[in-house]
Length: 327
Length: 272
Image 1: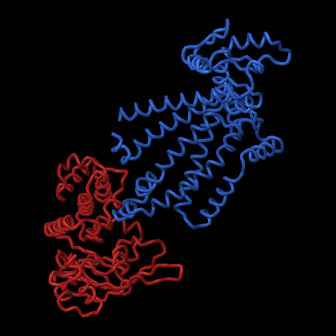
Image 2: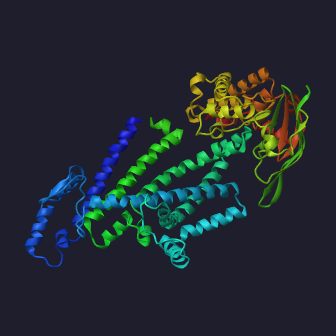
Image 3: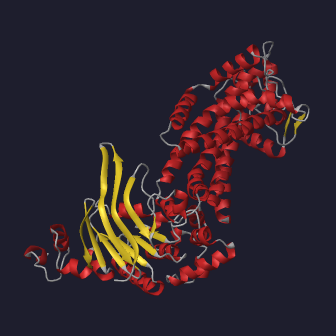
């Protein structure tokens, strides 16, 4: 088991390194000259040269990449300015440290992701489970019809409709502003409930259909029939012999979906004006703010790769067949 | 014949299909005495397994059952799911065809025996754990104290079927229904399982219904035989009677299909 974990960790390091290199090449070599970007409209050739010098842009590309990597772990100097580790550079637009920008916005994205995940897991799994048990009834048909509809609605449409109805027309909710929980828990909840819902609807519908299909499969399994033939109580049969096998595969998908969201919910955050990683990504792309784009991409890759490893480890705990072969 | 432990009268099972209801078991009657083994034979789709599932009320949704099923004089047909629960596994238990898929891959075999024991007998987990170890020992699983905490996929096919049998017998039921318990196993393991069943039956006095399509197996284990064809019971009598003097054409056809050692072998296959 230890060897397996170590192997995975080494793999993760290599994947992240590869992602770093590719992102670096794409954003620093294939996009417009960063020195020109920083210099702005009133620019002289001398100033461009000095910017290139400070940013190390006139060095070979691999040296630059090495400096970038080193910056993340030990910090680096831009001329007279010291950028302490973890250094992801400074925004071309605001001159703010990219690391500070991320740490300021990450809590918003995490709040959005966690809240949405709780909603969609509850709604999706419970809805799917009831549908599977009541297979073929009006409840099942209605719920699955709604689920199909829900998957099909783009979340920016849903976001705008909700915002228009609840905030503008009925005025039951305030405009989302991402307040701190400690300051005003009620306002915090009211601010986030719309983003959570918007983000959760699509996933909840998907998970409901998935749960339903998995549970129905499990109800047809021979071991489910054995459990009934053993005279176990209905609750025990459902919990042990239907739910556990049916929900285990869902962990995998959930891990990946959730990890993906930690890197920022681009559309939802942008529509609701929430200052999270997703909105930062959208803004930086619009303004070609390369250090920020680079950092956001790396962060998303980091979460997805780590999420993948966590899912695999959790899976070995959940499914004994995987556990025994992996040791 | 000893007194009748288990009586089935005029059992009819109707399943809903796309083309309307179909009778998959038609007016089947039989009895099983204490210590007795009834063999039910027939080809696939003859209604053997449906008969067995009807006994425990485990038929697919929408199935309808009429007739009478009595265990020790108590009528089982028409009982609610809750009432049948105390019969399932406790008074009548079942061993299925494919032992790998019949055991839940997510739990240790010990837990799967324990949960059944505790559902009917209650008691602590520790006590149930001891019962599970004893049950495994009785069916000849080596090192049961350690193996009880292993998962189904860590056992061989024959061992898995032994575990299913151990589980089925852990509450000392009065009737054991074995639905093709040896079909998924190779021939040597088959013989061992049959031997085990016969031995356990002689020590526990459990009545048994043994379902199979294999006449050779039936002849070695059953005192009485019921032959089924397309849902009908075409022949019913003692094993001796059915094998030596079959009255129905279908039984004769089945018996003729069994390869015999003194059969004429076509010359070309002998050369090959």
